[in-house]
Amino acid sequence: MPARATVSKELADLFSVLSNPHRVRIIEELRGGEVDVNGLQVAVGISHSGVSQHLSVLRAHRLVAERRDGRRVFYHLPQPELAEWILAGLNFIEGEIAHTDEIRSAVEQARQLWAGAEK
Image (cartoon, rainbow, N blue to C red):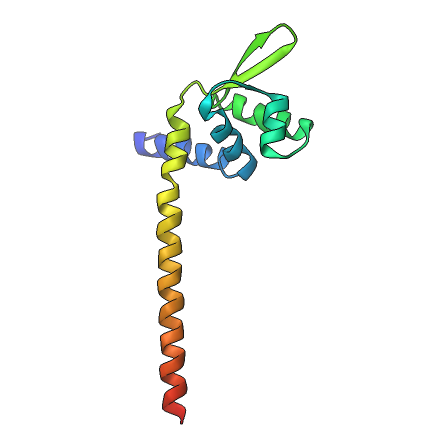
């Protein structure tokens, strides 16, 4: 498989894992360091089993790692820059919002102009 196709597939797999808002929240909650499942449950606002299922997916893709301390398991980001990268994605969201507002404004202006032409 050519290098670009391989890399494109790997990136698509990463985006697929990150396409769930709870997983994005978990990654952002781990930005500050290690957190156990109970802490993530409170922060994300979903069930204990839901957090565990999302952590399982994140671990399978090596986006989250664990450290055991007795019976407690703490999760962390082996590559903390992932949280920074996701946070940088807000620039795209803000750009989309501005783009949407621009379109809304253009539609409103067009509506006013067209309504005025009918009179």
